[in-house]
Length: 300
Ligand SMILES: [Zn+2]
Image (cartoon, rainbow, N blue to C red; front, side, top):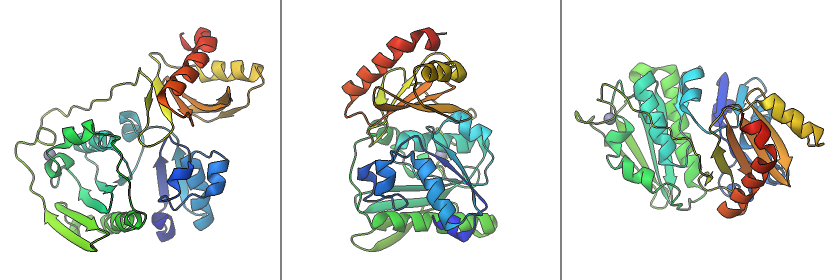
């Protein structure tokens, strides 16, 4: 929202999720109408951002963050607005590999962290958190977050983003800023690059991206993901659905439709997302039912 107001020319939004009621406590861009309409977050965000500043180009990608997206897209800066360390590790490793700069930001309870990271100029995320592997393992151990912390962290990220975009030479790449919104404390720590860091000093950057061949939930949401082992022919699937009087919203890389009262997205890559299932078992059942009737298309 702040980046749109300041007139940043283009924003690319990546998020696979749809707006749910529990987001409204902290995600200031969304409202109850978005929840009722079961809006995808990036599409709802694009709508609201255009109402703030119609001149900003907003590219909305309702997909999980991936190596492919970070490699294919054109951007000057990445802003981490994530809720899990699995994806943060992916950004960090890709920043080492591709050489981009990003603004790290995280929130939990009343505590937030912010840092401008460019592994070529300073420490990487693994130098800040040498226990990154543990943080990844405890992914989705959800701690709540207080409402006023989010804009404090977001504003700090936007400050760094603007400073970087205007003058990348006069900004520090080794400062971790911690924010305590209860004790009202801002603290800065200087972080050293570790000469033995297995991530940013490695000759070969390893980016793990294991496909989700088992149904799993996306952090903190009722959205579930399943990766098929083959690519999908979206036209064929769309035609099959339309033949059964199912309405299909077509996008360049994915289609979205309702099947048995459940919202689904199918991606060319073979990824399926199911929205709004109450739990993992239910999501598994819904996927099974969908796969049973579409196996002649999906298994090709
Ligand atoms: Zn490092």
